[in-house]
Length: 82
Image (cartoon, rainbow, N blue to C red; front, top):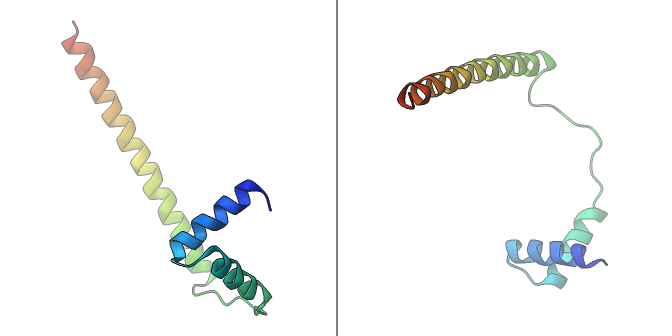
């Protein structure tokens, strides 16, 4: 076990409110469980694409707004320094 790994595990144990040995035991047991490889999405690919596109539009609008505000700030600060 590396020093970094031990520190990470100690932090995980502290966050979980258990001892280091209890944390390691819990993580080991979780890793030994068999997980179903079948993943069932809550949303269809079409819904996810719509969400992605909407998020992109919002991002573009936010970037334009930020640029506009930065331009206005630059104008105000250059006017006041003259």
